Picture 1 (tube, rainbow, N blue to C red):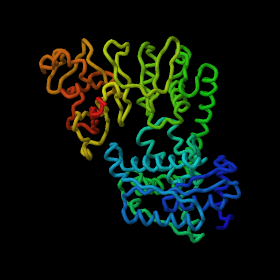
Picture 2: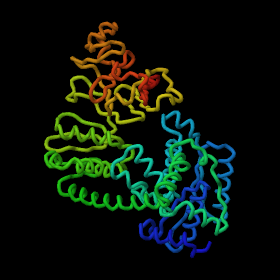
Picture 3: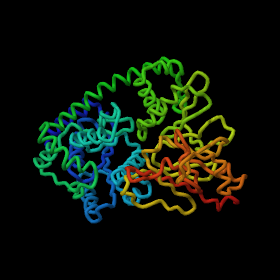
Picture 4: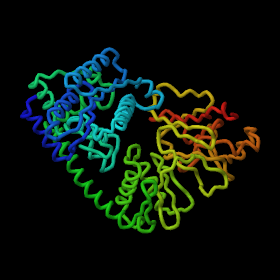
Length: 484
């Protein structure tokens, strides 16, 4: 490989300027066999002595989505590894089944399975960096996707050249056309994924339809422009990060990563933009990521913080629990139960903050939440041993909680015009008095949404205007071994 090729030279400069590699690094490279990952591997292999790398290992993941084509790609990458005398590790998983089981899109399922394999191998091999082949076009697509789905200022940074989990993206500067030119100039073969040409997901629609239109009608260098935008946002975010870090050093306190706290009065005196950034800073400090944390969570936390109600707590993504104790808000890591008993100080139980599966150890049960577009239901969860409810996702005031009946509870039973005391509903439904306190209630921040196993609230029912459906699956865990 010619180390003087412009792409190699630019990659070397980018790696150095972004401090992506250090001497002795064991770098694991995700290689699908496509042009981006093959170009990434060639660059790192050529520059391995320049950066005094310790070892290169190739990782390949088969999503089982394209049958024979996927198998050929795996063998192609295996041969590339053999030709370079590099270690090759591969895995496969039925991603389509995983997507159905977890209630996520196929694209998200593929990413989740792939990254799980990557990080398992990274831990096993004591790798220092995980190199991925994202390029400038991928970055432009990511920014547009985030903008369309809704994101805060930090989300407009797009993908980072490096992150706290050890992921590096040495080709993030390169336009896809530069990568293809490099491979052609060097006579390097690669595999083509036929599914990339089909509009089967939002990213492909952006790639095939939207970006070409933007390039034609708005700016021929839209990819470069969006890349510069992410760099500017990164500078702004770095400034905010320093400011938040300085404030936390001055006012916050920590006991390891499992307990951080901030003073109530000082926090409440800050601008809302500052407070919301501080929450994300604390979550990253505790868990290493803000993945799964969305604006709905941050705004819900901020509303609760500003009301300053005591004796309550809130569960955020990645099992971060927030308590108000005295004059401080305490953030802790907790695998605690999602069930509030009668007589507890909490008005509601801890929060279920989005799609996913939530264990309820105190009940020996689980709750699964899944959101899909109306008309795109896909396979339903198996209701055996449990209960299903379908709600209009936009009528739910997130996040949700699960609790027991409390005196004075009212809801609007499906099909009835007015409100009804839950106690009266239990009487009419002939539910014995001793069983009433064990009936789970799925609540949002404002109301009871579902009396599990009995009746949905009319205010969250699905109607012709519904756009997104929330499927709630409550099921008991097996108890056949309880007597052992």
